[in-house]
Length: 155
Image 1 (cartoon, rainbow, N blue to C red):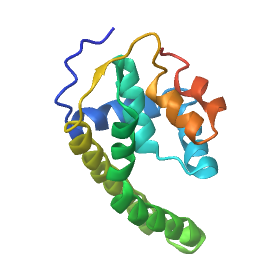
Image 2 (image 1 turned 60 degrees about the vertical axis):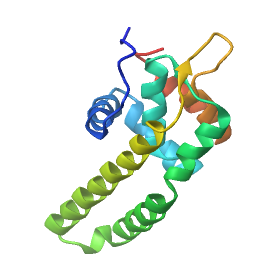
Image 3 (image 1 turned 180 degrees about the vertical axis):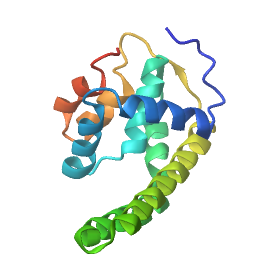
Image 4 (image 1 turned 90 degrees about the horizontal axis):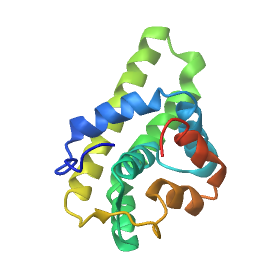
């Protein structure tokens, strides 16, 4: 069980957790389904999973603030991702790989926005009555079936 020394959360800590968890069996696929089929945000779900691992919860208004923190970067990231996909077959491999690297930089920046926001919020220990934050987000997106995929080796 992790210790409650998560805060203040750093962008690097979230990034390292995300890289590790994303490559857990089934998580990458679940993240992409959440993003592509339910308009979910991969960085947000990964942050919520991290908070769940630390048994942390947030008030609904604070969860909404996290989503608000994504607005500016999400538009840019979505537009870039769509453009990259559109031109994938027309780009040389090196240019396509460079576009993937740039998209990853945008993802990293977006995590910085989330970290800045979460560090300004009041967090509290999750009680038995609180459902995990990642489950609440999946329910909000009508993607409850993905919850188990995010936690095959956790919670």
